[in-house]
Each structure stands twice: as structure tokens, then as C-alpha cells.
Length: 131
Image (tube, rainbow, N blue to C red; front, side, top):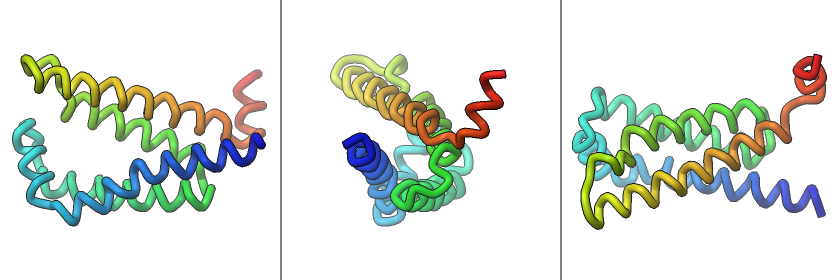
């Protein structure tokens, strides 16, 4: 049962990045507008890199390859996206509530990625960490 739960969680986290990674290319102009609205420099370059990274990382998670490092890298991406695109502190009213909800949801995704990384870290790294 433990393996089934871990596999399901890992694959669901992967889908959370795979689908938006693909959508970055399908809805390119919309994503560029969102990034420019938040004054992100080099929006086209960053969007392309993020899309490729999300798709590649999701495939690696689904295949259960390099899981601990991929999960840590995705956690870093979530933090960058959270602070730069879900800046609820810059809004009022309904938009503020929506961005705060996304920010908090992403903290949950961040936490799940940290748990996945810690759980899938190779034993030799865990052993060295305890010394």
C-alpha cells in the first residue's frame, strides 16, 4: 500500500507540472502577457525555459528517475513562481483573494515536493546527513 500511495502522489505531482508545462507553449501569448504584467524581464526566454523544465521534470518524476533532485528543483521553481506571479500583497479585493489562494496552494505543492525529495533521497545521502 505504501508503494501505491507514493507512486500515486509522485505521478499526481508530476501532472501538476506536465500539463502547465505543455500549456506554456499552447497558450504562449497569454503566459507572456501574465509575465509582463508582473514586470518579469526576458519573459519569452524564461517562459520557454520554464516550459521545457516543467515537462522534462514531470517525465522524470513519472519515470521515478532522479526523483529527489527533480523534486527539489521543482520546489525552487514553485517558490520563484509564487513570489513573482502570485504576489497577493500587491492587490486588493477579489484579485488579492485569488492570488493569496494560489500562493497558499503553491505552498502545499512546495511541501509535497519537499516530502517527496526527502523520502526518495538515496540512503547513502541520508546516512551522511546524520553524521
